[in-house]
Length: 238
Image (cartoon, rainbow, N blue to C red):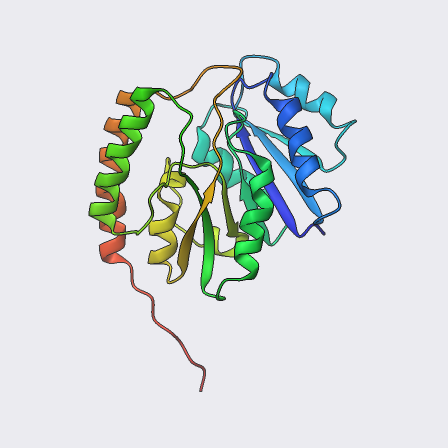
């Protein structure tokens, strides 16, 4: 059984798949027993064919396919459910997260208290367009004020968390943006770890500024309600 499952959701990222898989192997082979689970969100390009071909080079690779397009959160959720590792690392499929940072998250986990169950990547230097950087800055400020999750960057796709804890969280579309708050609601802690960030070299972004803004406002109200209604009580057996 692998110790770590690397979960990568993709939609129309055929040119980013081979180099990212090679970087994952370079970062983890020989350092930890791992598997890689790609979840293809019903891509309209030949991402599935590229993934199938990559199995010959990467025996750690498993490929899941959404029969209907369902979004990034559902892809992550299904990837974690299928994972065999006790710990999960997630990466965006566009290649902007550097797999070489995964060992940094594992080292942070090994030195952290047992109650810390989420290690979130913090992109201290963003390699995105001006509009994306501004919209992300505004979204992070509003989210932090409403949810008080003490996390500077929830939008980073690079995260490490315990599988069992993740599967106890309430599932909803776009939940991947609110993992620190949801982990806090479940009675655990998270910490942010500075990681690198790279410009996209192939493919196109799947999100626009207005998409993030309007969906994010609706999600924030829902997550704030969940936080208010959440209750964790220690139980002892007599």
